[in-house]
Amino acid sequence: MKDSVTAAQQTQPAQRSTRDLARAAVSGWLGTAMEFMDFQLYSLAAAIVFDKIFFPDVSPAIGLIAAMATYGVGYVARLAGAVYFGRMGDRIGRKKVLYLTILLMGASTTLIGALPTYATIGILAPVLLVVLRLVQGFGAGAEIAGATVLLAEYAPVRRRGLISSLVSLGTNSGTLAASGLWAILLAVLSEEQLLSWGWRLPFLLSFALMLFAVWLRRGLKESPVFEERPDVVDGVALAKDEVETAIMTADEREGGVLAAGIRQRKGKAFFLALGLRFGQAGNSGLVQTFLVGYIASNLAVGRSVPTDAILYGSLLGFATVPVIGLLGDRFGRRVVYLVLTALTVVIAFPVMLLITSGSTPGVMLGMVLGLNVGVLGLFSLESVTMAELFGSRTRFTQLALAKEIGGILATAIGPVLAATLTAVTGSWWPIAAMLVVYSLITFVSALLAPETRGRDLVRLEDAV
Image (cartoon, rainbow, N blue to C red):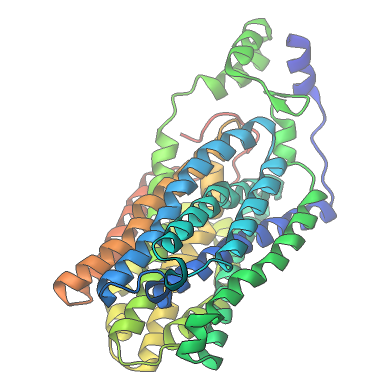
């Protein structure tokens, strides 16, 4: 055992070429783009048509709540996927897990487009919708975490924030693609065409993207950080009892490195990461999901206005995401987090005033600001900071759990809570208040977190 561990520790650092880095970057970007395209396709469909297709026998308000609930159900499956695939990724490597998750997501999304409706098979239609949503969520539960870990572990330390932000750019690309498809459908199809067959097209078209992503990941090399981990032997992480045995037989330096990773008391880094996740996840559920349906149902503007606003906001995000990544590399993660969350708190009520003004320019401007400041900017920072907070032995699992628990508590529950509160109060102010609360949670978490810029990602222990 000692010889195996010592050999693993003395192995030369894993070398990756610029081409390898580029392939990893494109793979991470594309997989995350596909995940968010799938989920944005679903969330937009839930906000625009699913209440009529799968829940037609209830009032519009209850139908919207039911459609949002099916959207939220996927986050329960995401948590299960985070546990299952996260542990697998920490044990056998990042690459193999990312290959499996892309297959699950792509297959389930395509099948949603082939579902019969409530008018055809009755209650079985929404039941099947929930089943596919659960499968989709199970695969997606580790996709963005795996892509985040892979890119952070591939990136040169001085440009880690910029390169890791490509994961966020993938979310932006997926949102843009989904919003663009829905914008086209809403512009060219009548209500009858959209409800009868048009809603299926975006889901069926995602099959082609899945095939390309699977092909790309077949040639992807493993993360160099995973290969350099002192507890990995022959491509598989040692179990805890094996590491404990190795510690007793290793010299002082080798034993100290291993002990730091498995004997550290866990929890602080996880809860800080969960708090950092809250602002982005909660704001995303409100801006990208709930407000689309709220605007379409409650404001006297064209039905394509909210989807067009997400489209324009996503386009601007192609500048916002890398700029925030660069700022994080230049000034550190904490200070940029504090500025962005404070700014979101300040603009929350003005943004909602713009959105509810009833004017198309006001809706557009409010949605674009909310998306870029309160969602995409925070996501860019989240991609690198959460990876740096965790040690390499449990990085995949802890990051995936922090993302998905945050998603359940904020993104999944948020739209349902917002729909309920706005229905009860008859006003928009609960939406602004929720934006403020979510952002303040992240502000406090960033204030308490250590600065992680430049941290050695091979280290087994967490940053705190």
